Amino acid sequence: MSAADDQRAILVEDLVRTYPGGLRAVDGVNLEVAPGEIYGFLGPNGAGKSTTVRILTTLLRPTSGRAWVAGHDVVAEAGAARRVIGVALQEAALDPLMTGRELLRLQGALHGLRRAQASERGDDLLERVELVDAADRRVGTYSGGMRRRLDLALALVQRPRVLFLDEPTTGLDPASRAALWREVRALNADGTTVFLTTQYLEEAEQLAERVGIIDRGRIVAEGTPDELKARVGEPALHVDLVDPAEAERARELLAAHGECSHRRGGGLIVRMSGARAIAPVVRTLDEAGIEVDTVEVETPTLDDVFLAVTGHAATDDPAPEPSLSA
Amino acid sequence: MSSLAYAAGLSAAMWRRSLNEVVRVRGALLPTTVAPIIFLLGTAGQFGRLSDLHGFPTTSYLAWILPLSCLQGAGFAGGAAGANLARDIEQGWFDRLLTSPAPRALLLAGPVLAAMTRALVPTTVILSVGLVMGAGLSGGLAGVIALYVAAVWFCMIAALWGSTLALRARTQQVGPLIQNGVFLAVFLSTAYTPLPLLQGWLATFAKYNPVTYVLEMARQATVAGIPPSWAHTWPGLVALSGMTVLFGALALRQLRRVNL
Image (tube, rainbow over all chains, first blue to last red):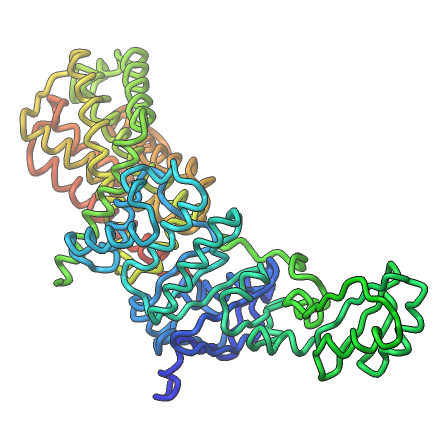
């Protein structure tokens, strides 16, 4: 790996993972993540997200291709890679018999912290994830949100340079999800690189500076959320008229502003080319004596992007990813 | 922190975590303790007159069978460590350990040490029941030490065997296979009768089964005809060492293959 490559938090080259039985879960993935970036790895169940994360976190060896995390080859220098990563995997696997405080101390011991250091770091993290009151309760009594927050705290014990979060908010209620998002943003503000896999488009849009969309083991699109949305098309205006009988005349008038078509209920959709102003549209209709009831701007979402690049919705389940314990 | 301090600290932390299985789960020790006691009571009652046969080194069949039950209880405690590891793998806990920079062997050291600690409970309870039933400690303190070393070391081997299967199968369904392996290793030995009284394939199998010599070592505690001596101890130590090397190597090999 060259000195220039060392500047990347994550570098993946032609990564392939084939499971016994022939399923190619990861099929030639290439990606780069800059230090301090939040990279959203988006895809439906079975797309290859978790397999990629398991390779990057040294839990699984690639069939071919290479990957580096913070400059360390995840196969040849797996030990060094493990020292700089924090991992919160899909299922918050926590020992229900242990308390939150005990788990944090054990995590400290795993990463070579002295007992006093581990205790101090654990106490800081319990405060950070707002679990001080529950610290001495067995994890088996925690709610889903509390378990996720503890899982995140465990991933932070060793102050990782690169944090892997594999579907961190799956199954959480909106309040817990928002709390976790706040924490991820705060971590990133402190300089931690975050590699976030999710099947929630909204989550990727909220958190990630760049998004890679993976489908059937391949990255099918990559860019900032705005760049990806721009690929799908320009914003559209949804115009409802007071008198739907005027729709055809309105459509002819608005053709100068962009591609205009009828929508269900008598309204119109104007797909604007270039100019994104609402005012000229409304003025044109007003000058023609056509009364406007409502005007809404619809911008493309990552859902639209996903549909456009994969041909199916993000919630589709094209092929189940093999059991990771199999 | 030195490597040694790190290894000691981590092993201790993992040992404490594994002991929670016993300390925090009510009745967790019952299966590994009660089953061998039932076996002890049943076998001593049904085959009590076997010791009248010529060639038996004791007149008390209870004294003959008691070390076997202790070894059985300790072996089951070791097997349980393997089953618990399979559960940890299946539920994802083991992934947390694997993503840490801890040397792989240390990830097994804590659970195996905890199993050896656990083994003290069934061994002591079963021995106590046997003594209450009338078995004597013919071998004195030296014999008791031999029994405990044999039982706890055998537990370690069972834990390594169980860990190997757990790492290979990665599912809790492997639990019965682990315990059946321990069961067979113990019973296809001089479990019921001395080697000269066995016949056919079982005599051949028992002769080459290392557990036979571990049992001989343990029987120095209660069997009057096997008094504490180096001659009754070294074959057991060799057998235990050999099994440790074999199953330790298998467990570590499987651990290295866990991310393939």
